[in-house]
Amino acid sequence: MKSLSDKRVVFLVEDGYEDLECWYPKIRLEEEGAETVVASRSTGTRHSKHGYPIEATQAPDEIDLSSVDGVVIPGGTGSPDKLRRSSEVAEFVRKVNETGGIVAIICHAGWVPISAGILSGRRVTGYQAIKDDLINAGAEYLDEPLVRDDNLISSRHPGDLPEFARGIIEALSSR
Amino acid sequence: MKSLSDKRVVFLVEDGYEDLECWYPKIRLEEEGAETVVASRSTGTRHSKHGYPIEATQAPDEIDLSSVDGVVIPGGTGSPDKLRRSSEVAEFVRKVNETGGIVAIICHAGWVPISAGILSGRRVTGYQAIKDDLINAGAEYLDEPLVRDDNLISSRHPGDLPEFARGIIEALSSR
Image 1 (cartoon, rainbow over the protein chains, first blue to last red):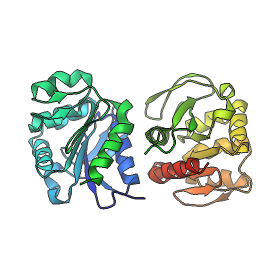
Image 2 (image 1 turned 30 degrees about the horizontal axis):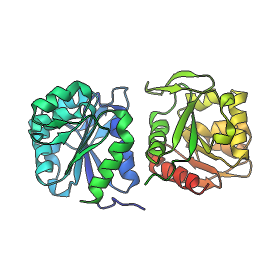
Image 3 (image 1 turned 120 degrees about the horizontal axis):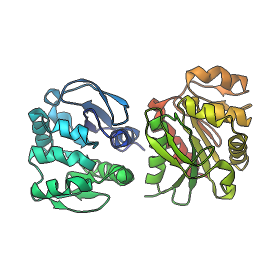
Image 4 (image 1 turned 30 degrees about the vertical axis):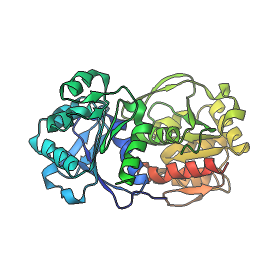
């Protein structure tokens, strides 16, 4: 029943994260037996767009990359806008991508892999408002609930969460 | 892949509902292909404990019972406390139970089936604070992440959501 019991996935959040874009895939992966780790620019409590608290227990430069199977980055305008300012966050996402780990982004989260410089030539979706940013970063934009380009998984908004979760689970399962 | 595409599940919410106890099972059931319907004492927008909005599109007495496979009642103190005051809500939950539909409760949601008078002699769990209320209603209380007594599914708090969702899906699948 538990397909992902050997998998470890990092969630990157900052204040203003979109509540469900974080918690739905997080609990969903736990339901499949995966270990989830919440990281932010520094450790401590962060609050969602609506105030739901979450505890960041690690900073990206403290995480052992060899133990990471993927990173999920929720949207909520404020959260990826803050995360992308950190060179440690960008470096972490770049390295996860380099080692073939899953990079899963939804809504405004595409800003983070843009600043990590990993989107050139890749198929991706995201919230309509950042479509131009994705294209200007060299990506091909598709207006679909779920876009998978190898290890890169993307969705547009909370309404895509069923597809987003399924996409992450399938990508992790085949890893 | 989609095991519940012929199922229809009603979520009963009022202002103050616990964000994840509503949204996690709701999106999870949608991921399995189920149709979800949000109902409240009257139609309109409700807000979670942390302010997350949800649209109630039906009142319980408007719902065609023959099309309902189950009801999920999230916690959050304020939501079940309001719902239980409505005789239409109590009647709806009683009828879903009578017809063998799933009744799934988490956290403080046990107050609603207490007021519907359907817990006598049944095994159940719930938030520790309402343990005495459950016992006084004639139920056997178990301190476990998931308790299933035939069509009655219960969990204690948001930390039990992976088990709660799995319990609901299994009960609906075997219906």
